[in-house]
Amino acid sequence: MLDTAPATENGHPVDYVIGDHFDDTATLPLSDVAKRLERDILDVQGDDLIVREAAFDVTAADSGPHGVVRVAVSGLATAAASAGTDSDVICDTIQSVFELASNYNRVERLRPDQCRFILAVDVMSDCDGIVGGFIGTMRFHDW
Image (tube, rainbow, N blue to C red; front, top):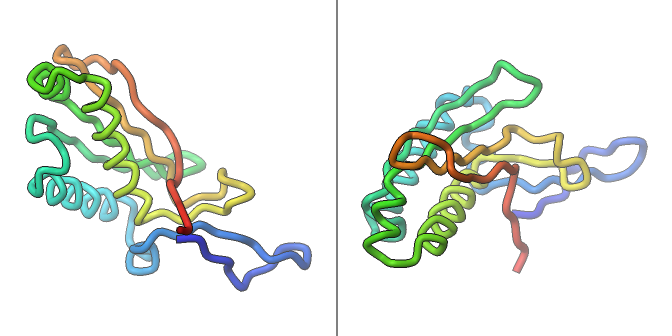
């Protein structure tokens, strides 16, 4: 997922971190990317890699200076109670969502504000209040 684009800025190469599905979706509106991400999340959940009790609402907004894909996750309190390890369930769920979203993003490595979108994951309580979450752009590795 680490790629050095042939583009240069002031004579220096520009390093981008590019998700595996970025090229396939680069021309799509962010709302379509959000729909694909939601489908990916549900597929992973169907494979029992995300707890079944979790429910996801994935939306996109293009109105600000950067696009935002927002994922609201509910049902984790119930899942954590049954598993007995709430922080593990929540962390594993956020990590899975973040890694799946990274597949659709492109981020300039030295200037992460230069990204296709920012991901915001909100973990919701049983009363629909936000109890935690994560905001970021990309998870990458080159191993």
